[in-house]
Image 1 (cartoon, rainbow, N blue to C red):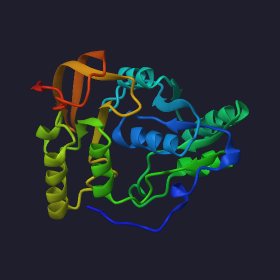
Image 2: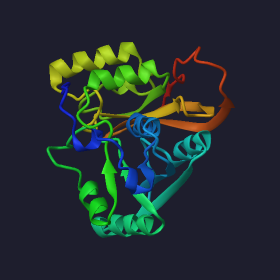
Image 3: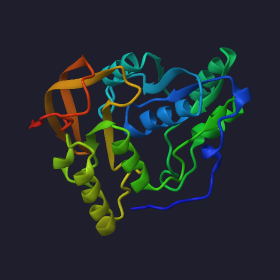
Length: 255
């Protein structure tokens, strides 16, 4: 587990005032949602949530219906761009199109280098004339997880890499208990407590900027050779009634 503090990095600088409106690269997981909250607190106008997806197939860890429901709860447009190889050219085309629309800034939920490599999305976006801001960059993992709890985020684990984490963690709420388990697992195996290296993914069911709360129904855990993930038969959107009772969905096992 990596849990360190760092001096201000490019992603933590003040949002450039000359950049115009911004978009957030969106998965609906904890990092993209927290990044949105961070830049909105700095006064950035976010015009859209942008997701890049495959031309064929579906997201398992971050289903599109969940992302659509989150966007509706936030009152922000969600755009899904279906792309295929060559990927750099596909990303570049989208970023250039956004720049022509007047978008000046791209926000990502990146925390650290993945697999020892820098984000190539940054180089493509900047090459298209967009500023890139990563407000979570090099933040302490513990501080990020505490911030989610302190601000009232309701987060559930939607996927685990079962080569690195227990399949039974799928469906667990990201609370103090899970944070303790992540820290302990990290000490033993070196996994990243924030899941930055793909150890796990999440759905955000509620957050301060949400106008309504997402409630997955008909929940099951599906297992495969690459991991285990959460599946919901339905997704209800309900008015927010306070912070009580945020225990995560009840999960049954399937397969």
